[in-house]
Image (cartoon, rainbow, N blue to C red; front, side, top):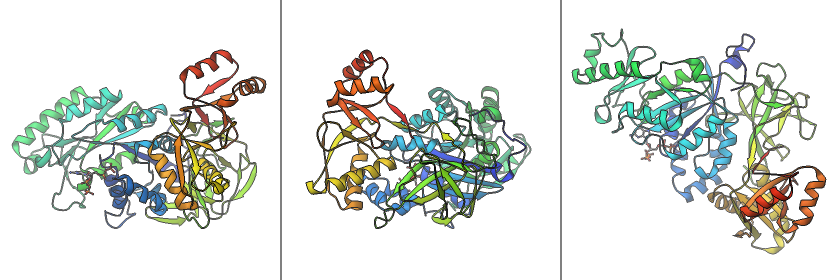
Length: 534
Ligand code: G4P
């Protein structure tokens, strides 16, 4: 977290009430179900079940492709805004599949906090751990939801220990489960000292809250069987002795995570989690930028593009750039400066993502995500301001881990292919390199599924069947340094040199040995596996 004190007195109330976050989890832990319940409590959807299509669609590869083709669904699910009590929540979706880690990484640059969902029977799984590490790079505050407590799950202390040990973060229980599996009754709310009872008969019903005066209150016995009550009293006593108490500052700094236990499908524990995000979650945070940091309360509007989605309507080749507002109060029709091109840009039809609907955004505040339809001017990493030359930093592009050659099925269509590839490269869906020697393009991705998605989108959106073929290269590194040194490297290694879609030089190889040799022989040149999006 950057160095701004929370509760700054001059932060406008509209900004202070915003909570912008993402959910991180391993597939199947319950992210979709939890999202659905968030929207339900946020009044954004009438009935649970509307986000369902997405959860199910993701299950198989072919269904996943269908989902990708149905751009509407994935777009509206990319960012969702809803009100909960006095708060405005902006939930930014992270792509579910592990193959899209780069996209996920960039999504996490647009949020101020994350909700980590774990399955009570499975604990911390691989994908959760990976995503958690990304959050840690930015010290994002983490709110943990231990889901599926209505099923047989692990011992509560064991779950907490596993998170502490695996993720090296302090865990403080915000609630404590009573019974488990078939005997799961609900939770004891450790923050408010009250009992929350789950309703098994109606999955969409909000839990019944029973106000009590501490764990010795005789009223407890009316709701909890003697055996479970003794267990609860013992466990909570032990938890209070052994586990750290909630420290709001440590939560904001990302050193401590409060954990709620619940069952998303039974709507249980979700509201308490939302209360927690509202109360202990961060307001919109300052954004790192060059030459100076941007503070949300600045009156001038600024924002940056963290995601681009193209071809929502193949006939028009339109794109939506997802912009996280970093400062100010945005109003529809405003003229902003597109810093990279130094050109003004009238933002006349911005979109706010209110659950399943897209609505024209009349206004938005720092912390909000708006969609700006455009014809390709806006790229990932771009900064928009009211005139000042500021460049948001920290939105990297990663060197792809898999490279393949790509050819159009019809050789006459090579130009079309180039156009399609450039478009996807700008969208961030793949890296595209043009080797100096030879014809054709090399496409690089982080996960193999991206090749399939790319192939199917080129065919669907450009009517162009393509073939991927093995490439002689397996690694790409961006080359930077003084011009003379870079030119010297290029001239002596033409067969290894290519350019990316921004025209930047890359060194392509299949051997780590080659990379080590270049580092040794060209000390003035830097080879790098990430590039800041310009
Ligand atoms: P994901 O987005 O993280 O992948 O998970 P998703 O919400 O799709 O949930 C994965 C499975 O876990 C779903 O079951 C869902 O119904 C179930 N689930 C979610 N929350 C709970 C819970 O609190 N308790 C229990 N017992 N199950 C839960 P599925 O059979 O794969 O799909 P479906 O047929 O229910 O749609």
